[in-house]
Amino acid sequence: MVANNTMDEHIAALLWTIAEEKKSFVSAAEPQHAGKSAVLFAMLDHVPEGTPIHALTGEIDEIRILAESPDGGYLEVGEISTEPPSRYIWDEPVQALFKTLSVGYSLATTMHTSDADDVFHQICAGNNISDIDASMIQYVVHIRRFGEDDSSYWRRINHVYEISGVEGGVPIATTLFSWHEDGDGFVALASPRQLKASPTLLAERADSIRHQAAAIRASIEPA
Image 1 (cartoon, rainbow, N blue to C red):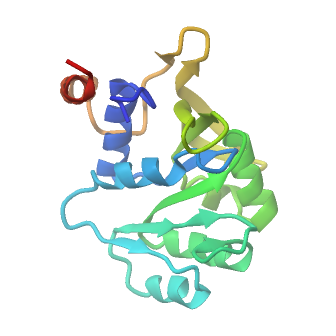
Image 2 (cartoon, rainbow, N blue to C red; image 1 turned 60 degrees about the vertical axis):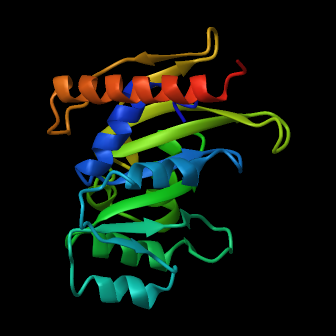
Image 3 (tube, rainbow, N blue to C red; image 1 turned 30 degrees about the vertical axis):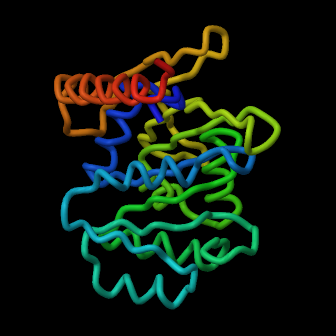
């Protein structure tokens, strides 16, 4: 994703570290086919070795049973949405999900939203989740999609938000990264405050990713 400029190496290093530290996050976008799940699973590739990842079916009984034996893993939800597909949840299953998260799990889910405020409006107002419970979500990755069909789609990580709390259903959000359409570039706006990783470690990871992305580009460019 760095090689095709969906994100830059600094965002990639941050997303790697979010998952490594088992922070709860939402991968969000407004349209379909924006790469929400691709970003989510790329992040989950970096969880600590041995971390359970529970791919939820969406059944409320499964969510409640998991609360009986917390294991510090991730609950991976297909989507928090009113739509009917399998693994999508809304209302009572979402309420059960947040109760289960509170006993010792992290959340990884996708959502169709316009921005971080919309994420929490849907969760709090749409599903009757309290501010305290909603504040278990610590990061929102928001994606923009361009193009008209599968052959022409291209994507950019539009914003990465760090959430320090929720008040009245509105997140207390700091924008860590933003994409600027003019110039097609990513801008770092703030340093994360909820991660244990040092700025030096994040910079080292970004440098490693940059070299890997350059190698990938070189391998696919015509001679």
